[in-house]
Length: 67
Image (cartoon, rainbow, N blue to C red; front, side, top):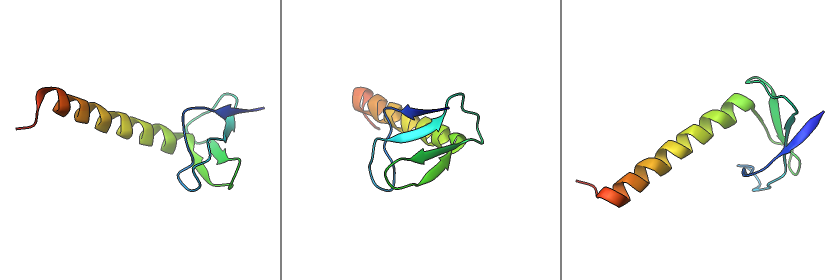
């Protein structure tokens, strides 16, 4: 069984219709329902972590100022 992912967009076409297995594991495949692009769950997790880290750094810099 598969499920649709929310809060993510395809890096190729911008679609928000991404499909993953019901109980995803790091080597499972996530597929864009629009263009068919694929990524592993691990790749999406790593990209999310990196984006979150960069957003946090930007917020800290914005709040406390850069030197």
